[in-house]
Image 1 (tube, one colour):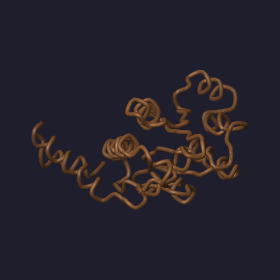
Image 2 (cartoon, one colour):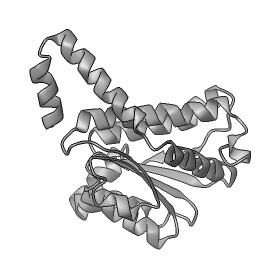
Image 3 (tube, one colour):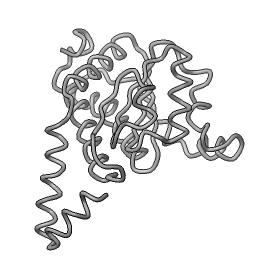
Image 4 (cartoon, one colour):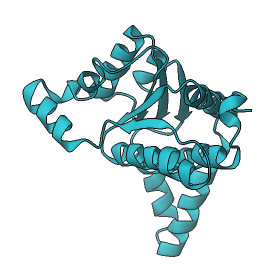
Length: 208
């Protein structure tokens, strides 16, 4: 958070802070690994074509991004004439989350939801600013045992999840910059989902 605090000290007026915050997020977007983004689009396209499922997992603000991502890939795609995706937001099922958290512990709320339903070739997308949430790590580790594809939308230095995920996009910031990282993750949602709205043949040509 030092960067954001420093920006505020330099520009403490509402307008000034608005300007420097926007410039900071724009800089993070400019620094994205767009090859990695394109690779993930290709993986989503293959999953769509092969009727594989894509599971999204995240905590807090990232849980909200999971729900938004699922909505855009399914309902948004259908609304724009696409075929929709077989997607599921594992962070949005309150009954399952609370039951598993109460019965087996919060660190297992996602891995236990995946047990018995995750198939080889399915995709698990972990969204996390820190990359260190134990429940996400446990789910990704389980997914790897099932030959599922693992993707991380991460921040800071990538954390524990970065080396565990098969593919990842890391929004590189100082540790603690949750807001800017989550802003960029939402842009990735809209970037990827809108791509499939505009390119309805993406599922048949590998995302090109």
